Length: 294
Image (cartoon, rainbow, N blue to C red; front, side, top):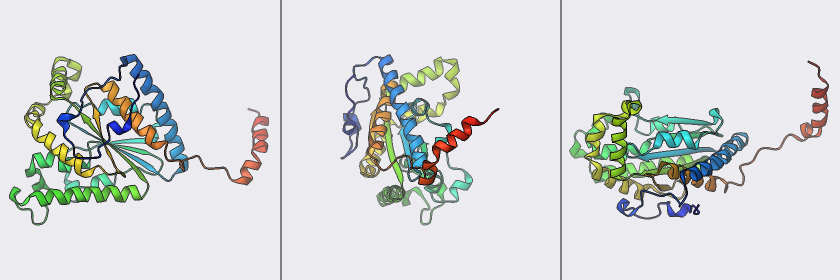
């Protein structure tokens, strides 16, 4: 299997998605990719145990992508070996009435990871510069001051929002949150095939919505919005990675590999030492337990 090079996927400049691959297999079979993921996710699970014991960092994993990009199955497979209490998944839908009474980042802020845990955002705060940019009328539902009509939502509005998101991520990163942002880059043809599978396979029918086809008509609009968002918000403290998503098994391996490589660099994350007095008496404690009778 070919080596996975993290830098190949990291956004460091202006993005043109049409120039980015949507398929990768590393010259490996499905079986080999499955084995590779199994090994990495075991290491990730072990790391989370240490992260919890250390207690000073949390990890935020942000997943974005077009419909059918494979976010749900990636979450299921990559985090399979975690302690169930060590990872929390948040799927952000249309904002609720309560959420609309706060600023657009509020619901994301309150779901940030506790120290020692991973939080996965399945769709993220970036929806507020993606779906709302394609459908600016949605912004009116936020009831913002000085925004009375779509005409009030100009380029300066979006530039401020990009800056707000960058500031939000800088703040949480400065306070101990390690941030990963993955864009699952799906081809339009692969999306078509996956939507057809939702129709053909009875067990997948529930996933299909006619609204998916309406949004598909806006594919080019979404691609442009993603290009701008990725280009303006990929920072060293919170980088974006563009993941070829047509091959789900390879995409999962890439995401897991990028996380593991980055997390290994945090040399200060280690299990705490026992108190000297407790350590000195471990043998005594062991003997007491071994002498117990049931």
